Image (cartoon, rainbow over all chains, first blue to last red; front, side, top):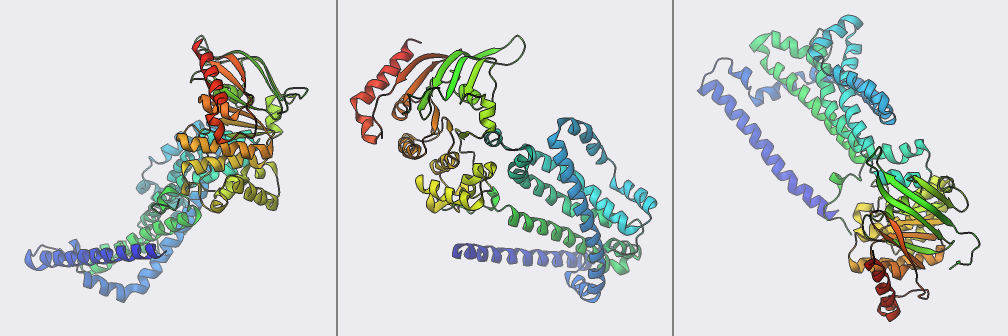
Length: 270
Length: 259
């Protein structure tokens, strides 16, 4: 434990230094663009950090409220899409026939541009909440299904033979072997899908919703250079929501599958 | 041990096995007949390509013979498997990564529907027998290869199988680890008394462990000799220096020369 803490402290300092250096470089480039090179619309290209921080302070409440609306809907859609994707993977793993039937459609569904699908869907359901949920679910579905199916299929033949030798029932083989073995695949699918679900929800909001981070993003883009700091703030909030979703999934992964190779402590204690 | 039993525990008559379909069949096993008695420790010994692992998998009902009949305790291998009479140890430990050592050992008992308290008690006992009591709450990857294979043995023996099938279980270990595990296996086996079918390509290993050695020759797999091992039990590491031990090794090696 002591060694671990030292490691964490050893990692903390470089992280802080890097972050500080990055912000300093950002601020300098911003200054160069604005005051030295005197480029037109310099602040739209790279605004001052301190101005952004000010905007965050002033409009934090709005950003929080709209961000929460986006994240909530994206989250619900993500869960629905993940469950549907995992179930399809389970069914496909049980029958090669169903896989051959369903898989081409699953792939084809990913060929439809979300940018085109979102307004169509919005036109049909006429409800921004439902549209956001559906698009987030739609985006989540495929990577989860694909990675989980690979996980379910990754079981070593000998591990299956062990089950056969002890006359395990088919559902026992799933419960005690295939499902645990598929968790790493499931989580890589979830980690790919989570930020995409957020992006998808924001995209739907651009189509004319009333609430959400995408709405104020679009509004401030329309108002032009005068709202540049607010526009940048919404972009940053969007990115933070994506990062947050990824971190949440990673945390779940760590708690539920501590046995995965990447979580093993170096050296072990053999 | 138990050679006097009336009916053999495992009975193979005229077993043949060919792989592939159509005209390009490869004959892996050619009309092998042999009997294994209850409580007996036998080895299937031979070079690669002699079909020894295939033979083990036929007994285990993981494969079906193309010809001949196979009886296990008077029934078919399938019935024996479904009656959960088998335990198995593979060449690799095949432990489940997400289960701690303790719960890898209890797995067969779970599949048999044994209660939780009883299962964990058995796991404690077996892990103590293979000298891993202190590692019960580790994950498999925290153990060395030899320790992992010991866990696999504890797992196979946890349900006190009527028949223990072992497919080159120590071939991935070095010579020292192998000899030590040979001795440990015999001491654990003496407490359980299963019928053991042990596949190996090591002559000293087969001689040290077995009551009888079935020598197989390759391409196609045929039974070329059956050698009784009259060394007394319990067998100890000193026996490895016994002239009788060397004599048996030489005898088996000679039986290969003729192949």
